Length: 485
Image (cartoon, rainbow, N blue to C red; front, side, top):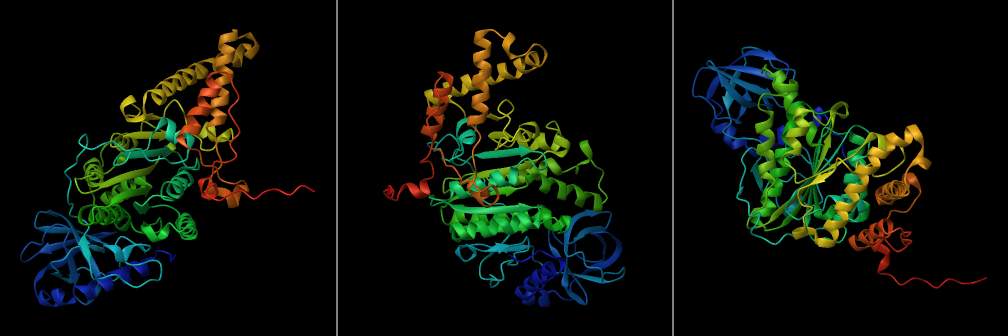
């Protein structure tokens, strides 16, 4: 996969310019004004003629490959964002209207492809120009929650299927600090959920490491999942303007497949917090006064606008998995709280659990889900979840007592609960398929029935059965008889 650079972004602008060359030529002499101020990505244009529309791309005279996106208006001045961060701009340059906005390709021609926020292919494939949509305009936001039968999707991950059921058309968040396994867990979910599903997948990479994007691309390619996947990247070396546009660009593609083709979409975001971070950096460049926590004053409205686009309609569904970075491991951060309010399930990854070698490093007490109800998961599953949460709360309180007096001083009942809780923590740990090349251990896949049986065994004082046949990718092949020497 090709690295996203400033040069590649400029190429995307050139290709977009070619597509709209006739329009640009038509309005080449329709001057809006001249550049009056430059500061970082912010470009102020003094209005001398008709006011352009919001989010419209403006053309710089003599530089057809440079585009300025209209952000807002202020006292006879148009405040724009320099999308390509071009350094050739100078005060006094003439600016013209293009009557176009940023667009990305949509449709079946994009399957198996990788794009950036401007719709430029990053996989060395041909440019897609025949079917493009504006990324700043949402479509089909009428939801049907409560009118359709809820359908659970099995992930093969014990802790997710048990504590945060993955329900079609809903949102699940994987929340954690740096280095606790958010990206690896997201990759494992992509591998497991899309392995046998007919749903189409869209991956949105915002502000993450280039290496991780390459690894995911190669993994999806090797497993054959890439052919039903569209990927959008705005990695950490991109400007805040580009990174803030990746989410809406991917949402535009998802809306098209949902509304025009009636598809069920699996939408993966890594990392939604980086989207907020990019908007905050951009607002700083534009000179806006920050709000609580130093974030952009419009950040929560922008987040809600994006999340609303990832909704289901009467034509199709969008099921979303969003990785959420926690700054300084602080769950009370305003941005983290704002994101969590948009999610149906929140899976919290803990650094202390990760330090004990448990993968996935899930905090069983802080993990919550509004979908864990008898109507969705069934009475048996719901009761077991309540028992597990109760025993884990008791385990958390007993740890402080044991640190003082020791485990042997506990009552027989407390000692049993404490030991069962330790078994549950170990039970929810499992090896990942996407990490086989690193750990040397084969990945495990557990059905929901196997997970529930194992938890019941632990709570009833029995040893869970050995799981040797848990990978469905090999279960459909008859086992070869072993030869005895």
